[in-house]
Length: 125
Image 1 (cartoon, helix red, strand yellow):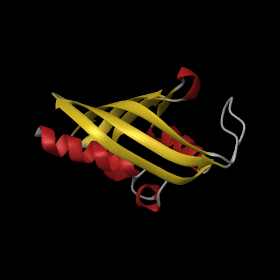
Image 2 (cartoon, helix red, strand yellow; image 1 turned 180 degrees about the horizontal axis):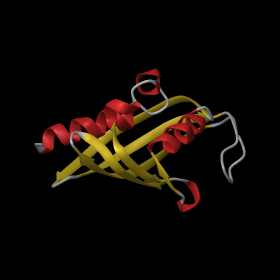
Image 3 (cartoon, one colour; image 1 turned 135 degrees about the vertical axis):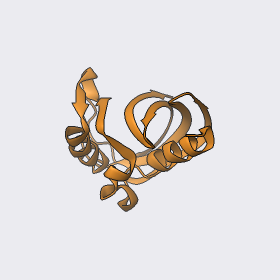
Image 4 (cartoon, helix red, strand yellow; image 1 turned 120 degrees about the horizontal axis):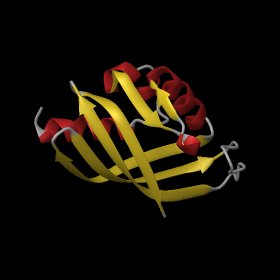
């Protein structure tokens, strides 16, 4: 797969977080053997990830992720992004604030057969 297609898949995936565009379309983006690290370094499979991702998304409103830069090589895409939202519910170790925020982050996505097989997120502020 060419690097532009990889970047497009990765960008669509990240920018769909917390939106109706993602809720019923996880299979479009995630490989059947998908795994990811979630809070506390817990590694989860696709089914568990979807469940936790949807629960996590419900803790925020006005979600907007904007991918601002990407590099693709081999089976990896590195995306630099900005996430803005309002936290309306508790998440692990962070009580609800009701305030808006903006966080910069980096994601490393591994792709297999045009879908993500593994992801790693790092939030930077």
